[in-house]
Image (cartoon, rainbow, N blue to C red; front, side, top):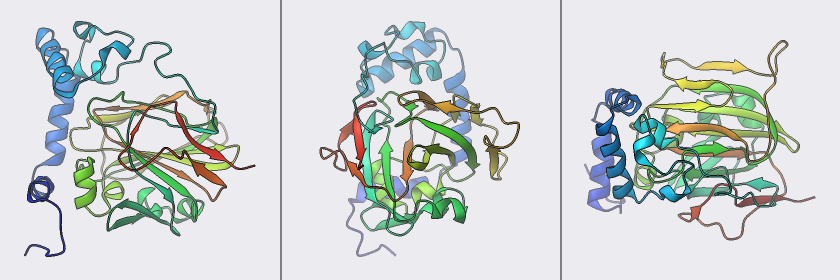
Length: 294
């Protein structure tokens, strides 16, 4: 029976409902293979169509010629030309191009997903209660990368990597309509949880997978998924004998092969978000995201 309290447009409800029945993983694997293939003129034709369809600004790319990309993935994860994203002077920089989904205070351990939907930090990080507790009463930001956006992810501040967790899950779309219609979306989808220690304490960046996101990669590991073994996998970077990974503010930390969402977590701090930020607003990597009180 339809929910009489659901005021979303019918077309939106239908688009979300279809995602519950399509073979998400098979579709993602198939498209991921196609995106990785070197298809010559066919690949260039698809890239040119994509640029027109989504309004990709190729003038910002280090290589603006669509014909020079071997595969669609190479195009999708294209580098920017030097100076395209100057870094602001701020304690915390925006790590991606995209749009603001939600941001604000963590209510105990609950994060706002969309109107009427919350999910827990514990579920987001893969069920680790001790890790989630470090962010109780802290802050979060959820940033959506649309198909037209630059799809590399950069560090909001200098930090040292301590741990990475690959959490298996569903592959719903992460667009705004799905965020409004699928409870606990970001804690249900496949994700890579990257744990850091910064000067102010712990920091987490969660790379959330989605339908047709063929894989996610980090600069220290390379491609994390595939494989997809169906169980939680974990890597420790602060254990004895582990090679340390320290990144500076603005450094690249990862990328999506096809687009998705990043969720950031901070502990309880005197954190003040950029007053120009608002849900739905456009953002660019390197702009001021937040300041920390002294």
